[in-house]
Amino acid sequence: MPLLQIESMSAYYGDARALHDVSLAVEEGEIVSVIGPNGAGKTTMLRTMTGLIRARSGDIRFRDVSIAREPAHKLIARGIAHVPEGGRLFPQMTIRENLLMGAYGTPSWKDRASLMAEVFALFPRLEERIRQLAGTLSGGERQMLATGRALMARPRLLLLDEPSLGLAPKIVETILSIILDVNRQGVAVLLVEQNAQLALKAASRAYLLENGAVVKAGPTAEFLADEAVRRSYLGV
Amino acid sequence: MPLALVLAQIVNGIVVGLMYALFASGLTLIWGTMKMLDFAHGEFFMLGGYIVYYCYAVLGFNPMLATLIAVIAVFIIGMLVERLVIHHLLTRPVWQLTTIIATLGVSIILQNAALHIWGPDFQSVPYFVEGVAKIGGIRIAYQRLLILAVSCSAIAVLWFILKYTRFGLALRATAQDSDAARLYGVNIATVYTVTFGLSAALAALAAAMMAPITAVNPFMGLSPLLKGFVVVILGGLGSFTGAIVGGVLLGVVESLGVLYTSTQWSDVIAFSFLVLVIWARPWGLLGVEERN
Image (cartoon, rainbow over all chains, first blue to last red; front, top):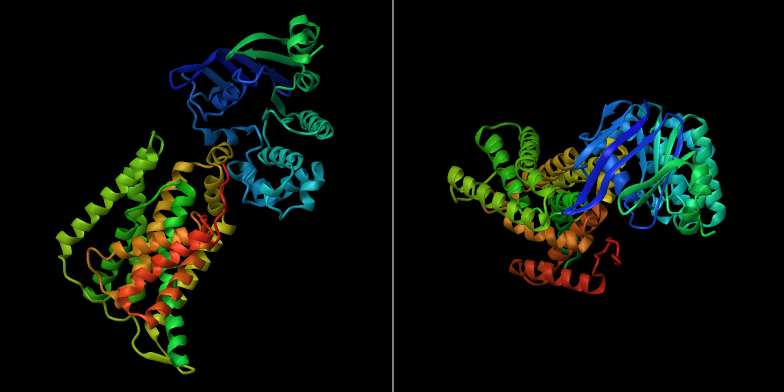
């Protein structure tokens, strides 16, 4: 039984269908990537999974429980932490308060002090600026804080939406190594990326999303060997 | 002009200004969190005034107990209004407009209910404490000192709640990014309900303090509502500190202005002051300039 299983999920913006019968699975402890061009529905897919948009049909199961009708605010306690595109931090709150928000809705609230120490071990730079407002951080620091906030919830599944967006290659490397670190501790990761190179390097399996539908799925090795994928998404 | 008189007016201005601040911080709390305008805020003020009148002047309760009853009752009424009316509008299109109309409707209903129950007359409320303090050369009624103490404590408590409690964290998170707040476990519908109740309770507290000075009547909420919007815009929409600073500043400017003109001019002074400030800083004294 996979950790997360999405079965023919469809979602709409008004009357426009944004997702067509998307099916996807993430196994316990796995890193799975979703790649695809801008506007393919990658962000919509994550937002539908976490209930910010209601799926109109299909089912979403997490640890064999259907969560398709679950209100968005209850998913974090189930172990799904969603890091939205751009981090979506609370700009007028300090780093410390943003991290506290990560533990807010979960049983890990009572362990918030030790969890914060763990996050600071991963991102020492955040500890140096603990009282600084999130809105004043650089792009790389924001992504670190957004990831740290998610880890404060002690998730079983981490959903990352374009963590490399707008970041310098060196910072992307750092973020990637942290994702791998987190994964080694047993957290499954669903990585949505336009940067296919990064996504295929990190993951063991991948999905290609185009026009709101899954057009290819399989081990990343298959993607790397696929001529069309290489031409369209890897630029080689 | 004697210095003592000017000083006395400044103190009076601060007292009235703190009432404005209490009232306006409720408006700004709602704007900051729910992004809507509450036109029923004046009627929560009015209800607070009547409950104090009834419990204290009619039933003879201790005035502070009467105040506590008013604050708690209006807190609950505020939450009910949110749950029964606002809640159903916020998730639908054009909620920015429908919530204005709905709160105006609530305001009219509450005003007319008060008119029906208590009649159109002004009901006077005795001072909570009698007597006048003489500090330096200034004479200040104990009632005004009480207002000073109560409103400062209320503002401090509110600030503490927003800054240091788990609920305050959730409220600020909701205000800054409601989607991210939901992803991290905040039930924003509950936050909205409690915020609305808290806001109404602040209006009721302001009314309880002011009732002995202004007397109560069904339309007593109108003038504070106008002043409240002045203060909120003056301080910067959604800024809590802005509402406090704006409120006190407006109170002082008004009472000093009255010294040189007359009380009929107080509204003219308030609005002229507002025009001047937003001319120089369209985003208010402590608001953040919005760039699109």
